[in-house]
Length: 292
Image (cartoon, rainbow, N blue to C red; front, top):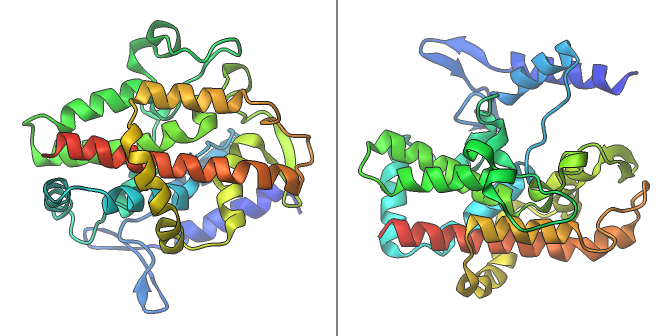
């Protein structure tokens, strides 16, 4: 059976799992607990893309990676920053820094799609805003704008929305291929086979490497927290993080053979974990600086 048709059926079932009730969509329960507080946006969006024959979007780090980064950051917040984060999150009861970490992907649209990445030419990892981020439409520009909102005296509603973007986009800019090369769309067009299935290099880094660890989010946060704390003294800007990601993409062997072996997985998994730890530390440092 065609894999796209299988995915179509799966997404169609996902879309039907939420029944309409007064006030919106009500998540169904599983094993006595809610699967999600928010009705998922992506199943319906992806289903629509499939029906139109459009390419599927990439989501940096996947859900777990973003939640790990948020968990690492929350554990390193100062008391003042944590109090302010909790106060804003209380506007949407039940939300946590981890749960909002994927909001920007769930609410991604054509006007914000470019906020999640920056493309570099192959011959330079030096960020040039005029070349790489015209009109501020890249992950670096988006982080800088949302930080200004978060630090401002605007409404809590606007600041909470900015927090959601900052938590997510700081994670994005640390995923190497979200600051990769323009000519292959950050590895999206580099087709390969990994873990006995067809994929592409971007997807391997988004979800394949972290999924291969087979560890839950809490376990990963606890294991990576010492490494993240060690990286806290080397806080960097969004520009620096993007340039680091680009340089990783340019390291020898980053583009694997079309059939990815365990040697590649074992070699680059520590790099992936390092980027998660750095993202958590830098997100915490940024929030601690702004939310005093």
